[in-house]
Image 1 (cartoon, rainbow, N blue to C red):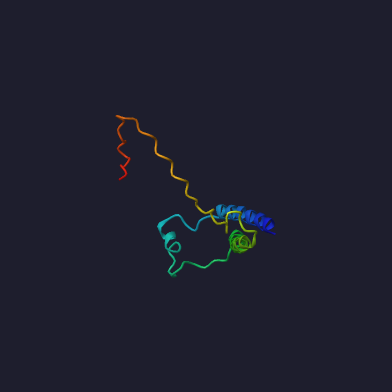
Image 2 (image 1 turned 90 degrees about the horizontal axis):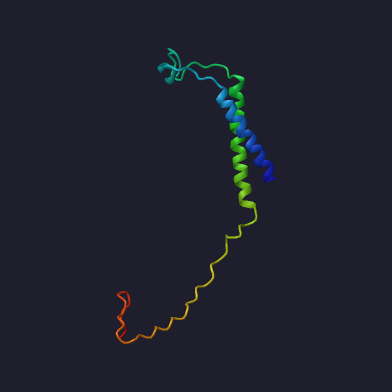
Amino acid sequence: MTALLTIVHVIVCLVLIVAILLQSGKAADLAGAFGGGGSQTAFGPRSTQSLMSKITTICAIVFMLTSLGLWIFSGREAPSAVKGVTAPAKTEAPAAAPAEKTPGQQTPATEVPKQ
């Protein structure tokens, strides 16, 4: 089921990309940034939706639904091999016996003399 939903999701993504890129913009001038060319309405003139904008709307809704479906199915899959596994308990290695010193050998600077 997840594979089918993933395939539908990818196809919808591609159609959505093509539909958005094929649409023409409202206007390229400064008035287009504020809702239309010289219109006195607050949000620009209302027009009927073209076929491309209907396709974009439908693809956007299907994209959101398939995204939610994939999210839901991702929680139902078998748990990962890493999830729920505890790390093994740390065991302390026995301390190494100090090497015998020969007469005249100096102690390294990092070693603290034992008392």
